[in-house]
Length: 501
Ligand SMILES: *Cc1c(COP(=O)(O)O)cnc(C)c1O
Image (cartoon, rainbow, N blue to C red; front, side, top):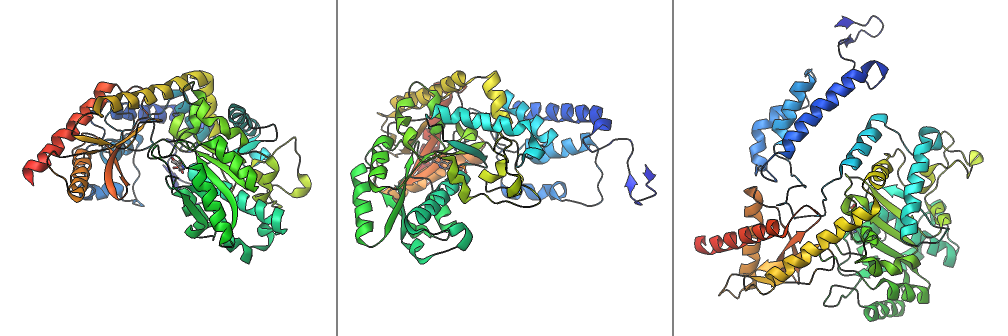
């Protein structure tokens, strides 16, 4: 330790903490020690320690951001083991089947480590250089897979929610400009916008409504279209809804087709919806946050055929391409539509310096400083390969089907749907009980009991106000026996509820 004469700061000269040429051995040591702790996390028996929020009260001294501490790397890692790694949810564990969290691929982790260390900010060419080219290449790769035309383009986003936001924004501003000559970006709100209506299925992701609200249009600007018994949007109901809104004096401006609904993995009939959108001259967005990755499979490619007609597409690599969060993209059919989010700042990307051969990705993003999330995907495509990712997705789909056939005739279960992707929604039925409210209570009891005991994490959802359980399968390393093991836990817990209540 010494006192820096100029700044009067106490500096520890033994271990440089900045990432620079002096610290490369420390960097290596820190990363190796961190990796060692994470390896212990992988050896954990359960997906979760089962500690409840109240159990963390005793660890408050670890959580506290205290100004005076000066831990060594070993001490900090030990604290974070006790506080976090021993307790956090392990998505790679076969008993984790709750949400759309995938186990991640090692090449992607390497990409993330490199991106975090080098810390490229990808918004302008002069901050990112070849990183910009890598992001552009990943975008072109996925646009080609989706068979979008040469005019198509895209940008990495923080997730499906942000991608869907961009879709609604571009659709709205394009409609306002094309049909009313309005420049909403420059001039803001106009009364006619209150009449604009989006259409999506009643099973669409909540981010559609949430984003419409954030854009000042309100939930009421989103019309929910009924679905059929396979949880897919009914095209005739879409036409009826559009006509009804027109009669009310409202203005249909866009339709969102979901490729893989969050709960049921169902695909809306995209080709038919694209024709209806064309007929009414409205924007067609495909929300493929969950199902978009299935473009890499043989089994589901045909369900995504209509994507090539889309004006914009959402795809989450952090759901179905086994990437660490965040890694997601927004694609648009015509790159010119990005003008609705571009802004030229004198200090960053002045308009007079605009140069198409030297792109500034900030012109396509609603973020400014932005992570180099495309690098993880680059490592994955180079090392794992698109074909193998496709086979992983087929594997989890067949696992869901296998589970379905295993339990569909079991009197203990009521199944909501046949899996189209890799989810299965069902509810436990206590034999001899006919009351829905009691079944709701039992199913929630099962979910909560399994979670708190650290045995398994299963999700719940509602259909017609009734509580159901949900398996979301994204782990190609899980086996049917792993899943039937959870099914047995569900049955045991359900039976236990009956004997104790
Ligand atoms: C998960 C999901 C989203 C939201 O994506 P995030 O990456 O969580 O923001 C949007 N749409 C669908 C269909 C989804 O499943």
